[in-house]
Each structure stands twice: as structure tokens, then as C-alpha cells.
Image 1: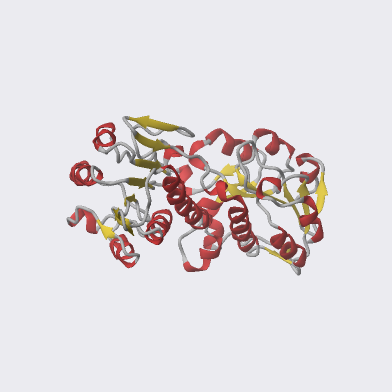
Image 2 (image 1 turned 90 degrees about the vertical axis):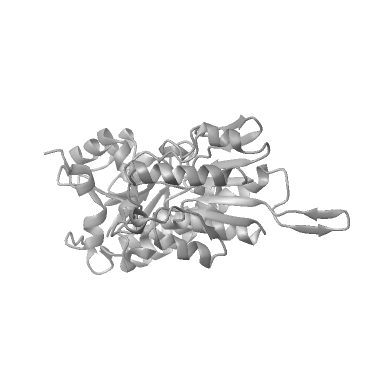
Length: 378
């Protein structure tokens, strides 16, 4: 029997790595599921909700890890958690591997088979396992709702006997999953929406949602996307042209939402202090990339900066603010991933030739093995 362990997440994390629905599915696969008491409380999931679906509630993380073949987490395990796991344990989580080399080396030293869920390949077969998409989708929605809450005016146009209330102008920078959901949400609230992205494919996606696309559309722009569908790092000349275009556009916007991230790199700076100062008082900048250094020069993690009446929001763990939904989706992502190598008949059987396994495997046999993390280390 395969044993799965789910501990309580660390401080500040509201999501859990398992839902009652996925507990039931794991039990159907013949698994024993150990859940640390209180693991779901921040997502409004009671211990009894897990128990009713077949989970065993245990008092501590160490007790959960005892005899566990697989550990499921939202965030990378702490040093203490790694020490409590048996050698060879499978760990699946959002590891943020570029930020914690020492943590990876500790997992490798313990011979853990660790999988970083944010490395999920962008292929059709893996779509149901894509945690970045599921969590970014919620974050894009929440970004607009939070921005609207801080914006001291109405979002839609309103016709009244006393006069017309103009619609809010919302500019979304980055049209990935989060950006597209932000565009769709802002449109539903009645705003005038514009958006920009360095990937050519984004133009059609933005326009399909009713937004207007803003970009320097030269030859470099046409080649600005990797085979995996991610944005490439652009040349300094392109960045300068794009910055000029954006700077002129930002001046007249009420809300700017920035979502730009490049895997393994600091967030690109898109909004300078001068651009913030060019906006009218009461405007909002919502920096979704603040945890990776921020797209806005003035953004501060977990803070709201007031610069001459312009509010610069630097929210942390945005998807976690919708913990119930975020947990449900993340838990399903994990289940769909584990279903690749856990079954009632074969137990735990990992096919290391599978491209999904190869794409997400970070530590194995005492070594850090993912290509993105081993280049230049020989």
C-alpha cells in the first residue's frame, strides 16, 4: 500500500496540498492518506471532512511522514521536514527551485525524489497537472477585484440623471494565464481594457477577450516566444522602444496590473518611478510579480506604497487569498500528476522515461538532475 503524507504548510500559506475530493480518489487508488491535524483549516476544510473521505488525521508532520512513500506540499519542504522524511521519499510541491539551492542540495542528500510542479511541461497531456495555470488563473481574477476595491471610483460606465460616470481604464502588462483572466475580469466589470505582451500569439488572445493590444510589433517581437510558450528575454533596444510606448500609455490609465515573469529570472522592470509619478492621483498599480523582485520599481512585497496619491500594491500569495478554490484546483493538479505513477495494481511505479516525469524531476539518486538547475555546474 502506498502511503501519502500531507503536513500543515508554513506560516503565511493558506492553501493545502489535498482536498477531501482528492483524498477519496487516493483511497480509491489503494493509498493510505495521512493528513496532519489542521492542514486544511486555512482553506475552510475541517479534519472531519478529510476523515469522512478516508484520511487518517495525525498529530504532527513527523507522524504523517512516518512510513510515507509520498509527501505532498504546496511549498518546498523546510529543513526540518526534509530531515523527518525517509530516504527515497517522493515529494511533489511548488519548490521554487531557482531560489533555494541549499534546500535542493539537502533534498538530494536525503535521496528524495522531488518534483517541482511549476516545471510541468506545456503539453496537452499535462494540462490537468499545470499548477501555474490553475493558480495564476485565480490570481488574475483576484488582482482586478483587489484593484477595484482600492480604486475610489466606479469600474463601469454609468448613465445617471446627474451625468455620466466614465468607465475605468485598465492596462494589463503580460497576457499569460493571469493576464488573460485579469483582462476578462476587468471587461466583465465594464472597464476599457488594454494589454501588452512580448509574445506575438498574445495579440489575438487579448483581442478575443475584448482588449486592445499595445506593443512595438517589429521583427524581434515576431520571434519573441520560446518553443514552450514562454516569453523570451528581449534586446535592450526593444525594451527601450517598448518602454517609451508603455510610458506614454500608462499616463492615462486608472489601473495598471503587471504580471510579467521569466522563469528562473528576476521579474523585468516595466514601470519606473517616473512612470508612477506621471499617473494621476487615485490610480492603482498592482504588481503581481513582486515576489520575484517586482515589475514596478516602487513595489514592495506585502506593502501598499502611496506615491503622490498613486497606490502601488505588492500583494503576496495572491491565489492563497482564494484559498478554497486554490486548494481544490492545486489538489486536483497533484492528483492528476500522481495518477501517472500510483495505481491500485502496481502501487508506486515511476516511469523515468515519461516526459512529464523528466520535465518535473529535480532531485533523484542523491543528485540535482533537472537541466535548468545543472547547466554550468559540471
